[in-house]
View 1 (cartoon, one colour):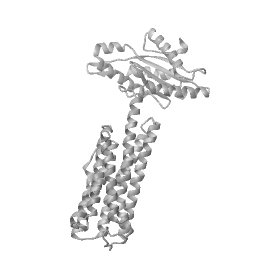
View 2 (cartoon, one colour):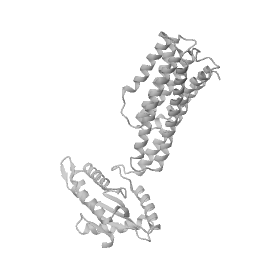
View 3 (cartoon, one colour):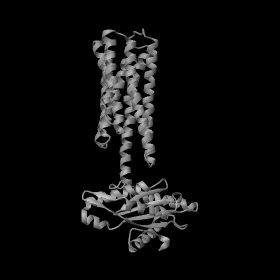
View 4 (cartoon, one colour):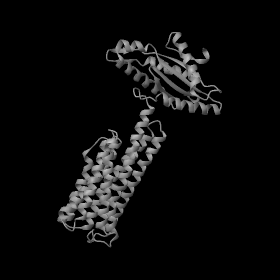
Length: 398
């Protein structure tokens, strides 16, 4: 396939991929849409750049080559901004500087001091810089996700498309490095890039198309997986406090209790209920009540370790799972109670000293599900309430 035909085929595939991403745009979450818009515009600019390069033997070379390469360089810059926005990085105009400087250099090597080799070297370096920073951003973003806390199966699947894109960017960057090395060794190269029969010419035309075509497909996968991840996160999380919800804690507890039963150990649950919560709502309003729930969630989360997990069951009730590795369960529950009592809750009209009552129960050898253990914790909680509140009662003490 000659270089011109290669450019035409590549352009058509770019337009097709960009169109698919455009059709998906409204279905993406608001958080992902800015990055998807950048990627789509970048793909369209890459297509425009390929079209311009395909006409370099028809239009003035001093005009079409700088403009065509500027489109491609701007496309790479928008790809960089897309991956940065995807991971929530702040926007910065400095990322456009390599494209601007490279375009000036290409104009110089095309119109003022013509040199095919220098044009290729400058353009390739202009690609390598944004590719390097895009790879760096994706790697850092992936590491942050992996160390952010719960590393669920959907997050592991989501990481796959991220690292496929990293590999794609790296391959294109390596191809551009090969191109730089080749033309550094052949500074006297003068064959127009649209002339067939030279492997470097076909290579030069294929390389710009690899990322907009294959990379766009992978980026679409990333966006789709991000949407799925957000749906799953919403289904597993309490909307008000950000803690795991009842379904999530129940599934986790059932799994832990069944596993503990097989090895002759137990899992302890601490049922936490805010004392006089209705009074807070009636006196200060439901908005303050919601803030109080978030306050308790924050305190509980801060007290949790690798062996404990806190969730909101509903209303003013929270549930904490305590593994044997977390130490004495009653002691851990008392830490929860004390931390909440000492962390005064500030609201627009002052502060409130919130206390909680806690019922504690440990799973037995006959229990492989949460429900019976939770029922005993609930009875212990009732006892704590009846004894004056602001205390911890273990089910064995009832």
